Image (cartoon, rainbow, N blue to C red; front, side, top):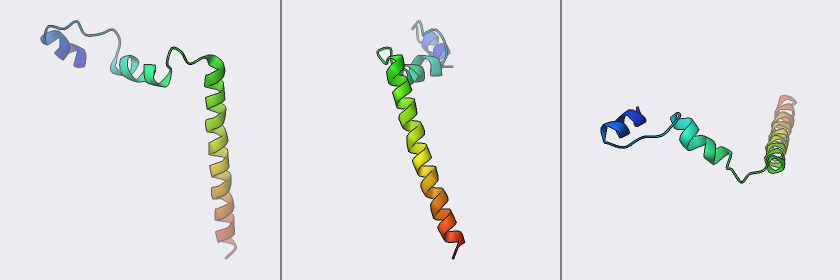
Length: 65
């Protein structure tokens, strides 16, 4: 729809869809190397594991009451 409106206004628009044009470059910048992506992914995984373990133990403590 955005491309259609741009073309109606006399602009060329862009190739691909909205997500491909705007979101992907934010999530995967060109200068972000594979090893940094892996490190960030492992950090996110580690944070999630810690949070789930804390929630689990808090739940278990409340079950004992």
